[in-house]
Every structure is written in C-alpha cells, then in structure tokens.
Length: 402
Ligand code: NI
Image (tube, rainbow, N blue to C red; front, side, top):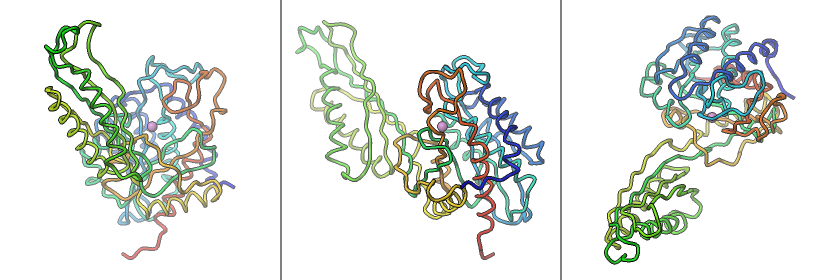
C-alpha cells in the first residue's frame, strides 16, 4: 500500500535522468557550482524563483502556494559528494576521478526537485515552501553556513524537514524517532610534550609515549566512571603518533580521535574531563600537554510535535507497518542538526534497500554509504518526492488559529 502521486510517477523518468546526471558530475564541499546551476535552472523552468549564494553554493527556491500570507516551512536536501574513487563502471558513474556521490545526495536533490515540480503545478496549499539545497554536508558544515547567511531570517519558517536515504532499510520503508537520532561529532588532538633522550638513558628525559598511554587509558574511564551509564557516548582514539626509531625517546606524542554524544550536556562533561585527565597526567609525570577539542556537528534531535506529524504522514503514505517510528539512533552525524537547533522539525531515513537495484557494472563492495560501490536507488525518487508533497499538503491543512 503506497499512495504515490500519479503525476510524479509519470515524470519519474525525468527525475532519474536528473539524478544520474548529478551522480556523474559529483562536486565536493562548497564547490557545488554545476550542481547548484542545474538545480536553479530546473526550479526556474518550473516557475519557482531562486535565491542563490547562501553558504557560497547553497540556494533556496521560493515556492508560494495559494495564500502567500500563510505560514512557511523548509524542505532541505544536501548537494555535495565525497572525495572517494567510484568503483562502479555503469553509464552514470562519476566522470571525476576521486570524487563520488557515495552518500546519495544526488538522490536527495532529485527527490526534492520532484516535489518542487509537482507543487509548482499544484499550488493548492495555503503557505510557502522554501526548497533548501545546501552545500557541504560532508564535514564542512554547509547547513551552518546557510544559517549564518540568513537562511532563517531571510526566509522565516515555522518548521524545517530533512531526509536521508539509508541502506539496509527496505525500499518502501521509512524510519524516524523523536529525540536524538544522530550524534554530535567532535574531533580532538592531544599533544604530549615531554623531553627526548637516548632510549637507554630515559632518566635524562621525560617520556611522552608513556604519558600518552596513561592518558589514553584514563580517557576511557570517562565513559564508565563519569557519565551516567544510561547516557550514550563514544570516545575513540584513532591515531597515536610518536617517535622515529628504537633507541630514541621522542620529544612529543600526538593522539587524535573522535567523541560522539546525543546531548550537549554529556559532551560538555566529556570535554571537561578529557582536559582534566590530560593535564593531570602531564603534571604528574612532568610534561606539558595541549588539548585541542573541535566541536564539529551538534547532536541531531528531532522535535516531538513535528516528528509525530511526519510519522502520521509516512504512515498514510506507505502504511504503518512500513514505518519504524522509534528507530534506533545512530552515532553517525549530520549537519541538518544545526537547522534543528534553530527551528522545530524532523529528519527521516528513507530505505535504500540492500543494493540489489544496482545495474550491471557496479563495484563488488556493499551498497553502503561512503562506499565506492554505492548507488542511490532510483525507485525512491517518486516515493521520496511523494513524501515531501504529502508533508506539505498535510502540514498546511492543519487547523490553526490566525
Ligand atoms: Ni549523507
């Protein structure tokens, strides 16, 4: 039972061509010039005015319904690709070596374009839809850049919504949950500055390797001894660098890694304890330490009201049995989180299936995000576009006092 919009089904071939063209021409963070040009041209061809240059390559399509004094909402798609070599050799594979749409943002753009085209021809909703095409989701915070360029002040909206394809969830299914759905992402670098010496004469120096090992072990106790057991967090040290050979104690040891949490409170606690443990160990062993802690993306927290609303829309679109309304959160991160810090809203996963949709010539790896053998599933184009359209129509049909 899936209630797709027939006109969207009728032009899904065009959406597929748009998606494959974007896939073949991937562009990295803040370099989405061709992508942005393509999207602007399509929106304008459907009679939708476009405002460009928010977050460098970002753009907003302004889609007005029958009541331009009504409320407004935002629908967001991300545009950027990844610095990854595509392993697929089918006809729409990347023409740019080392760049690939391996996260499906090509599909996210095409689904939102599908909704835009339908809604431009069926403006029977009482409000305004801002079609947000954002750059640089993959680590550079393009969502934040658009907010800093006035996304929510120039385009006032009462709620904002985002969608990401999710491999492993069956096609035709959606997943969502109120509250935290994705984690905060934070990078750290700890530099232990000791004093080098001959390795046979360690008493003449201060060994930064030994101190780094002490700190590394101490950091894990934050998760087990300092935060509440029911609070979720990950702290992974992913690199340790020091030294050059067997008979020299080096001057310095460097550790880098990532911290993921579902709340800012837990993040504050972990960062503070990391600094204490690193500085305490350095003091105890007579070294110096520098802790560089970079907060990248905040946790993505779905707002309860809009999430309940979206769940209802999804259930009437594909049937309740195909909507996981309390899906398990992931420790991955997503910069739509910045938008949900500013506005009520909700972010959903649309199932991309198990990879069986891929055409001959696909890579031998799994069809998972950030994998060189991945491809967005074109079956989702009419489904995702229909979700956006139904969300718009249902949202503005809500009874409200004005
Ligand atoms: Ni992505």
